[in-house]
Amino acid sequence: MGEGQALQSLCDCEGQKTTMGEAIGALHGGGPDGTLPPKEPAMTKSYTDLLTEAYDQITTIPTELATALVDDPDTLIVDLRDRRELEREGKIPDAFHCPRGMLEFWIDPSSPYHKPALAEAKQIVFYCASAWRSALASKTAQDMGFDNVAHIEGGFSAWKDAGGAVEQVAAK
Image (tube, rainbow, N blue to C red; front, side, top):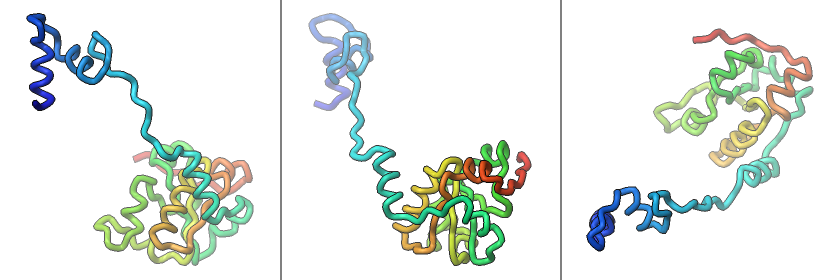
């Protein structure tokens, strides 16, 4: 018997009509009001586990050293933040914007979304607001075969606190 038939059977059992929500709740061990029992997340790693793994395997550049890379023609500084963050807070001058959700597609030359700028740089330095997304991005890029990646310690927040230059980004 399929789930749909089981639900219909539960709805019609013992001559009492019940709602579909009540039947679903009963079928899955929930309450009489149709609510499902709470599920424990089936996570095997937390975000802190992922960050710890990343930090153990990536290069982190102190903010003070990163400021010297802005004018380095062999370095591409990549801002991973959301467009709204750039518009609200600005960015490192001449940084290439790659939303974190597009990174894997933009760095892979076989992807239809590939951005050549990411393949041409001799060194890629990622940053985000506080260095979490950039740490994970650095690890991902390394996992995809890039050996020339790093990220800025403390992210854009630390960059601004250290007096790093900020370029304003116009709203679209």
